[in-house]
Length: 117
Image 1: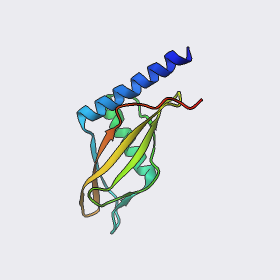
Image 2: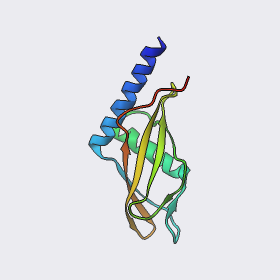
Image 3: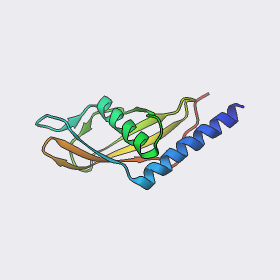
Image 4: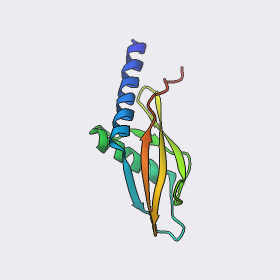
């Protein structure tokens, strides 16, 4: 039974990843500082909202380990965690910065990692 739930969760996460890759999520945020930087919490919220909207699913649990610097080419890795504990990596890459606004693309990994035992 645990295996079937894990398989279902991995399947759902894989579907999210494939959908995110096909749609090519992107976002832009006005951060309101002279040196553009977005907090890790705000980034996680925006990534979750974009993935949910793209997949027409509830907002996933996303965590990001660091603030996002507003410099073109900067990347960070966030993590999507499913209810069963399985995870999926999500890469965020800054595509442009216009004044205080940071524009970025979101790309989910193709394969989920199973929950730790």
